[in-house]
Figure (cartoon, one colour):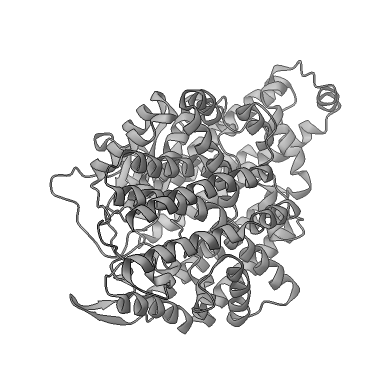
Length: 627
């Protein structure tokens, strides 16, 4: 899942972080984009009838103990089939819960299936840990000679099970932990959403009438009236702050719950547990965050360039963050129909190769029932995600499509996840190799965003449009790297502060946010309420410690974007196997095979900063030409 993220580089963060709730109907001529749920189960009753026996099969699976290579092969094939069956149920209910967030049965069934998937993973790990402790496997691994085909086929799974041995609980204990923690964290995120829905953001008087600041924030943030933009920005932050104690209570309880889970699974802390799954350590993450922070002046230089251009275009002498979305003369932000986005995406992603385009085209064809794209409603989940289950073509969900460029961005990003899932389903050697570190899959999706903006920039003739799209490209790179560093640093600091007893309330969270934001922004000195922005970071409440994934992903995506621009044919030749082959080795091995040489991610920081600076310089030239 990916929540659309933005920063003060382009628009006020709180006003653009979350999707608007305004429902805008699709043009009558456009086809309906809806996922055909019967591809998963013919009816909800059919799903319910299959679920209980499946959960019983997972429980019975714990009694299997393979004693030979043939037994192990049969065991892992059966495990893969159980995983596929569970994922079919999970994705079915995940889609239903998104289409109707008031569907309590869907939410409960989704949580229950997540628990069973965790239980199956624990059982598999325990079995593979016994295999890994055998003398035969140890000898073959030591000499890098594995003559036993089944061990060779599943060698990486066995190695990973051994890596997780110190953190693997007995299956019955893990089941208890999951049954307690999964619904607890789910309920805390529900409370966050309910708090937003009941927060008093207030209204504004506009030429079009009285407008609710929250419900109409997308329109208000780009109003031609500067006073409206300012009052909208300040009203949103003031609204959030009016419930600061509640937001802080929710977030701090999430942090404490994640800490309890980490300690019960024998990790030092919650960040260590989260990073471990991604083949990272807290020391490595902090080092990478520091490497990016050393380039924070480039982030501020870009903000200064934007401010100077807006000042020249509007006559506003003291540009603030709420001016960044101000409409400028000579160009109106485009609106797109879904079919237009489909055509545009296929053109933009041509550097990824014909096979990729074919897969994307099939997924976005409304006749195939694989894309649920619609305007938001009060009971529709407004973010986007993809689902992929072996044996069923992957699907895309976009919860609030209103025709903006940002919505097109969501389609290509989440569509990228869906295409990746489809390619894995068609080519990966075992479904057990279909899941890996999130930051890798996020990099593949972010690459699509960069290619979309690049395509629009290169193919636009109007100088105002070219300038607009180049700024969007730069902003996306800056968001993925700089904003991710801000958010990753903040979340890491929150967990450390709670553990040390330094962070206990909203005021502490405000102070921490202000300190970190000041390192990257030019706005905070004149906009002190930006310290409340931690309340708007939905992923900290929805998927704790996920945000830093985007830093790793952004660094890799920016490098791949440069490669695709330099030699598209060579890039697609390298790229498709990276998507198809799955997570058969550690990330450093996968990337070494892709690049053709070792490529530590921390070495990409300077390279990406060079590219970013060149784009900013290019934008400065275009600005001078317009002025």
